[in-house]
Length: 114
Length: 114
Image 1: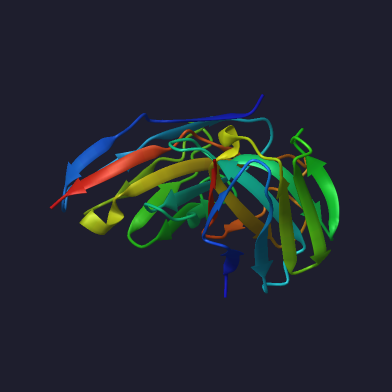
Image 2: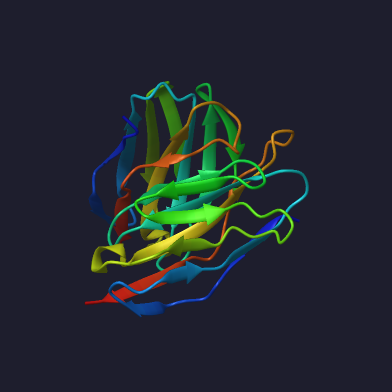
């Protein structure tokens, strides 16, 4: 089973709202990732968690706050977003903490900020 | 720095045509190479990968060979179907002695006409 699940599938939020994106994997992977993908562009790395600890933050604004409650779950808390944050947010996981390992992606959450 | 260059799209072909999507890379050391596919409205799916020179990755009729001498990883399929319409991303994973993020190409949009 190489499945990464993400909820919700779609999310519309205002600039004053607080919402959370959820990602789950049951492959025993120890690295999990958040990516942001704008239309017709490749994914851009936002955060990496390795063994439940934040190991990379790609200078992401503080209105995005990641959380890894356990080895299977990854959340992305959203607060005071801007319309330009509208995008597809992808979660991925890989077996260990080596980035050359295969990353398995979830279906994404399509976010619209009004 | 490391980089991936893939052919600009969109590529439009008729069903049962032969497909080649070119991908070349620049890297120090021995990276892993990946092809990911993104169907409309979905997340990325790993299509195939190769981890060392002369390896051939294959899946669903698609093939790509890791060519170190030409620094290439071209994607090929002998007979495309309408269901292959998607965006294809070539990606480079760092070599084993380096912890660094995966580098994606810009993506090639493929349209298959019935």
